[in-house]
Image (cartoon, rainbow, N blue to C red; front, side):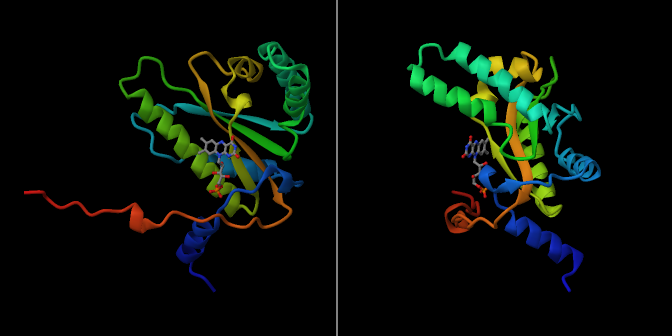
Length: 199
Ligand SMILES: Cc1cc2nc3c(=O)[nH]c(=O)nc-3n(C[C@H](O)[C@H](O)[C@H](O)COP(=O)(O)O)c2cc1C
């Protein structure tokens, strides 16, 4: 049997993204989700500003938000050729329904804070990573996506994301129907140097 530390390391070593097409029911239960989100908030946070928050979509709200996103997409992309517009507006209708649970990670920097904006945004990235690892450790699959639904200000209004906030990532969560092939991982040989003085 693996020691608890070894088991934790194996989980970190084996996390990989699961495409939305392979994320099925069930989603984490409410209790599991509360635990996952609690772990997600355990991140470096200079000044303890808590410069991030979550918006959760499950059940029918995933369809409702999709309808609204599609309408905003049509308004924002009026210059697009009609066929393409139809295709992508249709995708926006469905974009929150591929997985049973979708979580927006909102970067919510503290106004007038002495801590640099970049540091606050990095903290939101750390939240995203912890969320992915906690989801994996709970036996579920997930993937972090962005694209128009994360970048459009019109979409942000649909979610209730305020003007000073932005979306760090959209995390789709479910039960993997398959174990996806891993992708090649970076080789430390190209990434790590040991500093030595030049003179
Ligand atoms: C901020 C951010 C945004 C991303 N947005 C997308 C996206 O919109 N579409 C996509 O296919 N992958 C996106 N990715 C990549 C996936 O989340 C994931 O990293 C990739 O599929 C590799 O899988 P892995 O997590 O197993 O390394 C994004 C990654 C980051 C860090």
